[in-house]
Amino acid sequence: GENVEQHPSTLSVQEGDSAVIKCTYSDSASNYFPWYKQELGKGPQLIIDIRSNVGEKKDQRIAVTLNKTAKHFSLHITETQPEDSAVYFCAASKDTGNQFYFGTGTSLTVIP
Amino acid sequence: KAGVTQTPRYLIKTRGQQVTLSCSPISGHRSVSWYQQTPGQGLQFLFEYFSETQRNKGNFPGRFSGRQFSNSRSEMNVSTLELGDSALYLCASSLGSGLNTEAFFGQGTRLTVV
Image 1 (cartoon, chains in turn orange, purple):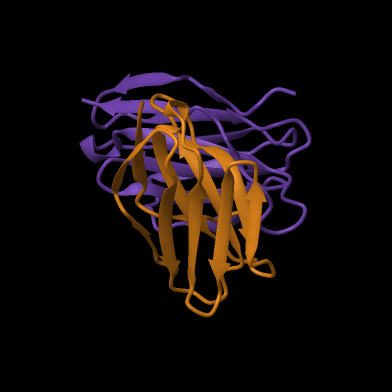
Image 2 (cartoon, chains in turn brown, orange):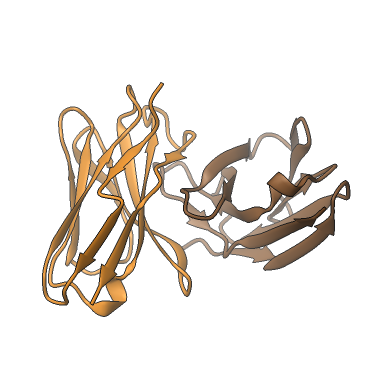
């Protein structure tokens, strides 16, 4: 089956700095890669996603890049704000339905 | 547009009992997936239902089961509860008509087994 690894497990940045979270996947058949943000006491919230036919996608301060050859994808958050503090999860899925394989999560702290 | 609704939000059960959790997806969504979230194992896929049929199944014992109704609402059942079943159970809703479409999560049901 698919194995998704995520690094780092914790990340602290100063407000205004950038944050980068990296994930690797093992199954070359995976073709959809969403990122979720989970705040305390809440369910994961979809923040951005990318499909395997695209190398990069951006939405305001958030961007995701995908390298299919190396089987890794990354989340980039620029101009971080305290409200960006949360746990972020990457995930991968294949064309077999909505079954996601999640990374272990990155706890991001933005220091004011 | 209402989001994904999971009920109840919290449950406390005794070992050996059974429990049923409910998930109402976003209107128009036909796929519902269930996940177990624990500090040790992270987010693990349980199963996915689409148009009342189980489309995918994770590696959980048969004590974990689910179903989906004609209105796309879904329930999951855990029988003979064990202490290790204590977790946050999340359901995710998606259109499902195409494969791997955007999935939106509910707030989860926190199950504690004592």
